[in-house]
Length: 306
Image (cartoon, rainbow, N blue to C red; front, side):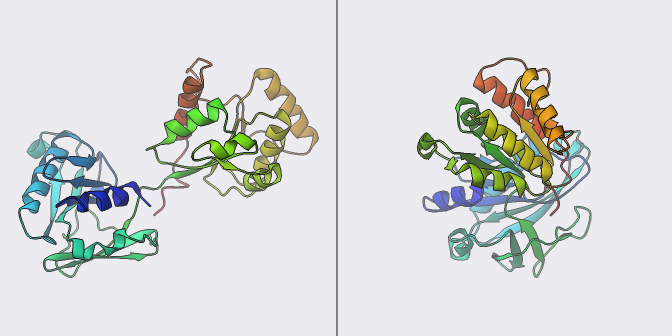
């Protein structure tokens, strides 16, 4: 379940909630379409990018809370002198007072997108499939009553297969929280079962997972066993993973490259040692920041298609 759905459930149980949704953007904008912010009389959860745009949106959301549940408005904001921002883009927002009677979609998420139907005094949502070109352009006609909008439930994220649940693996998992990275985390050691978020798996299962990595997936290898590291790297390099990275020294890299070539595997896609150059330090937390920063620099075309 996307984080905003969980937060909305909890907030609605305690009182009125407004939802701010970024419907569309043009030019330079602080957040992408699909971004959400929940607003209550006392606080705000999530962000649509900060600055005066967010300040204004929160004020509009609190004004919506004074109206009947289900009330809504679509607002266009040029990010220029009007808001005291110099981004130069445009943002279209949907601001609504959530109606608990129309929030059944929060109970059992069942799709990649939500289909919004704008009705008089209500916004009705149902789950649907991800469709290209569904979001209205920010300079097009504003949707009104009867309008239908298809929006992603959560921001697109890159799939990351993380092999190894030692100190560095745990640090990487902590750093990934809240970032556009969807983590699948595996280790074969018995203690893995006690590590929240990690899944214990056999070496064969892990190799199969690495081999079946889809385009756009990043494979990160840092197990306790160099033999397993090699088999995972070879499996991922034979497959379609976009990025294959492995922790290791220059000596380990040289040995693995030589062995991969001898085994008929092209090693040119192997990144070892893993981590963004220029970030030095051997503490698990430093390595984790370097690794995650490197993942965030990868081209986004493969996973930002909606």
